[in-house]
Length: 396
Ligand code: FAD
Image 1 (spheres, rainbow, N blue to C red):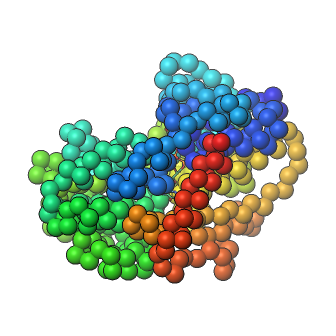
Image 2: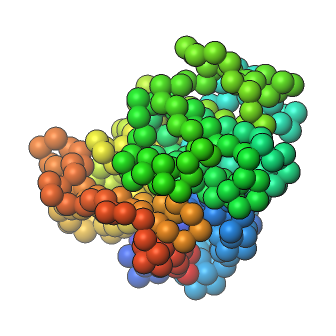
């Protein structure tokens, strides 16, 4: 097809889409990827950097495979506006690009206003989230390394849905693992707005009891509503205030800013409803949205693995449409999320999601997927295999 295809965001969804749009069109589609960062920094595995057992280099990959090997034009910039009527996007540089199809995979936006005082605490350099991998990932590790022995690391979790259901619990393990070795009098306090651990609950709780007794304390139904940066005090909706030393407060999340701004977030103003056969927004034609920004189907996590799968379904549908091929898609998506409970031992959760034509959604396949019986070193090897494979699949 001679069409002009733009991809906004070179993360798990966007990078995969850009590559598969080229592959599936036999390298004929004109694909331009717009991404502000010079390299891909992975959120999966980033908790190991927070815990100090891996470095930023271990989670960073170059983008040049997409340009050199696959002929994708990469523009290092951000999109500030999508005009769905004129079919153009505007960049920070002031440049305007025309499109026939645009793929939008901007990840999540952190709703800083959902915790009073959080935006200011961030500005003051007291808090940071490190929920988008990059400089904050290393900065959070530095905060933990600088914390006094006997201090408390507080992580708060917003009500689901949020990016990466098991991510905060994995992070708690990584921080506890570091503290156990370097500052054994310190504690990790998990303040969870949810009723219970939202992913791999029994596995995490067993690990906390066996590997981190007296270090990790888990408090469900603790919804953080405010923070006082000066006194490092966390305010809860119901319970008394809690003081900490390092405060890693994760606010509620929504679709990435550009999706919200374009009027695509038609699910409670937070997430983008899509047609699951091609991931086209139900709000605007020819805008396809992937990854964390979408209103997911039941039991579908907001994960990198899922974003990669969305991208392949969308890329196939877009190339088929532009080529006037008749296809009758019946997509089946898989997901696996590995969590490191220390620097070596890992647990996983897996699921399979099949498109259900009658209900126009994905449904978990009965009897598919499952959980690890217990953490193991072998799963740690699988986890690195998963990471290297998905990085190669989306970038190389
Ligand atoms: P992203 O990968 O975040 O990509 C979005 C991209 O869009 C970014 O590169 C951003 O710079 C760019 N962008 C945003 N706005 C614009 C704009 N206006 N113009 C141009 N570019 C823009 N998932 C797993 O599958 N397995 C795991 O083990 C796992 N662990 C995780 C651990 C942590 C600590 C965290 C935070 C997440 C983890 N995840 C994991 C979740 C995973 O990172 C996300 O689900 C995934 O990144 C979603 O892909 P995406 O394409 O939607 O967003």
